[in-house]
Length: 106
Image (tube, rainbow, N blue to C red; front, side, top):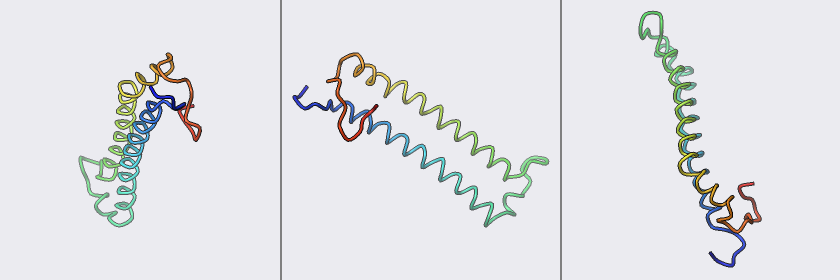
């Protein structure tokens, strides 16, 4: 540990969370934009029957919901395994107890 009042583990923790959140958010929004674009430019494709009275648009919309739930579950697992252990160490006194001035975990 250095004399610097900022424990580098805070920064690493923030980078981990930002990286995961950026990737998860970008992927869900890109998938949503694709669905909206298809609705605008290829409505005939979305109206195609998939199984019985269920069309492709409904299947893709449900897939959007499932993908958002999957990203949520991945984040929960990521936080439990990669973020929480480091945060607990810092809370338990493994850190300096001080947060970087320009923003931190608190």
